[in-house]
Amino acid sequence: MRAVLAAVLLLAAGLSGAAEPVVTASVAPDSATVGDRLTLTLSVAHDEGAKAVFPDVERGIAPFQVLAASVVPPATEGGRVTERRDYVIAAFETGRLAVPSLEFLVLPATGETLRAFTDSLVVTVASVLPDTAAGRVEPKDIRPPVSLPPDPWPFVIVAAVAAAAYGAYRFVRRWWLRRNAPPAGPAPAPVVAPEAAHRAAFERLDALERERLPERGEFAGFYDALSDVLRLYVGDRFAVRAIDMTTAELEPAMAAARLDPSSVEWTVRFLEHADLAKFAKFAPTVERARGDLGAVREFVERTRFRGEAPTAPAAAAEPAGGGGGGGA
Image 1 (cartoon, rainbow, N blue to C red):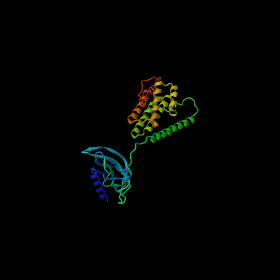
Image 2: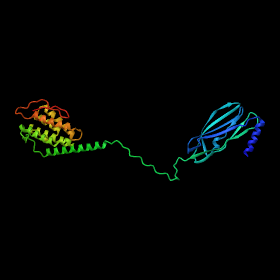
Image 3: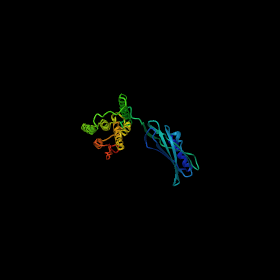
Image 4: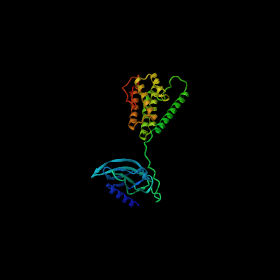
């Protein structure tokens, strides 16, 4: 039937003197997956002066859908005009899908209306899903673990709680000792005579040094013992209840015992520095700990009893926390 129609059109074109229009259709690419964009190109070549009517593509290429369309400027050569349009299309079904034959109408300046038909086209559209029928679908493996930076807050909280607990223990212990102490009166005679206080302190410092606590990482225990050695020496040398006092209480007590201000300042600053190490607020090194033990030894040497009225000696070695030393 189409051959008969084409013969009739050709005969009509010959009688009217109009050349037969030439139409083409192409689609690229010819294979895709569901939703991929394809380009459908339609063109028609006809005599100059004729008017071409393109097919209604949006209704005529189901199951494809037209997403966009553009018109290419016509080109004229040898009395023939070529018109072209490009369509962006997509299919949302799978299989071998056909772009059907499309009909063009060409209206010459004189004569009957001419009709021309494009060839049908086939496009293979595949699914974006894996081939489940072949049994090759498997769950994807989970992603490997990702290393995250450690959160420091748990360690900070634990350290703060430990410091608070230790501080509470020291406070309660000293409060209990003061509560059960005998009534206030003249300061009791020291266990060690003032003239022998430095020898007892040196023996305690030597024993503490032999324990090598800093080398074992036991800084809290080391500074607790070192501050007790200093407090015992102050108590034996100057008759001050230093072992049972807080650092804040010790300062006025040492001043009342008529120690020179430089010795009071050095002792208070050193004990504050030791408290920082004991309560985990300061991380000393082994070298720093050894230096602090030497600083206490030098303070004892400079302030030891020499059978004369106390005088202000040369400055003692500074503890790691700073401060100058004095003597009595």
